[in-house]
Image (cartoon, rainbow, N blue to C red):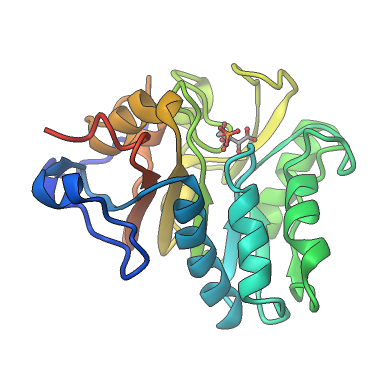
Length: 260
Ligand code: 6PG
């Protein structure tokens, strides 16, 4: 399997600027991370705003942007649409999809349509949807084909409470994939529908990877994925940009187990 050989270390958490994103406690205490820059926002709303600013700026300059699913990014998508309603220059992708039709409540595309696309004045010129309604192996093969040769500028990831990211679940066989960029995968967490997911080589190729995680229920997963050693039991720990930046935007609660 592909195993990252990056050094471990400690960094000072990096503040997000003049919006009150850095709490006093954080200024005084070291937070631990391994090859990840940190933004620890005061709360969920402020973490969403940090993410939205990155999304809006990336859309403006015509980046290839990989969206994530789950529920956490919805607010960031809404704010990004407010900050930049013209996404015409951008291309959008998904890191993973649940194998359901696009109008199903569980669809990751559906989340982005409701919270982002439906609110824009100008749609992204390139919308690369994973076809969740198709046979998962076919949908994965065709997305793999679409992705070949692309440079992904900004890749957004959520983090499951079990440490999974995209649909790469703890100790799953997909973590060993070295050739394919997109594969079908079995869900190990609700919703229990089959998934199609980018693999580690695809995720790691992005120029900038951004984890977004909020809430106390994510604190342990954050500690493992952001500060722990590379470990297939915590797939997020295996995801670092090979030759770019890896950033985590957290709120105080999600960051609570990163501190000394
Ligand atoms: C999915 C995801 C997945 C998600 C995490 C966090 O399709 O389920 O892309 O990796 O990002 O499970 O999900 P929440 O934001 O709902 O906690």
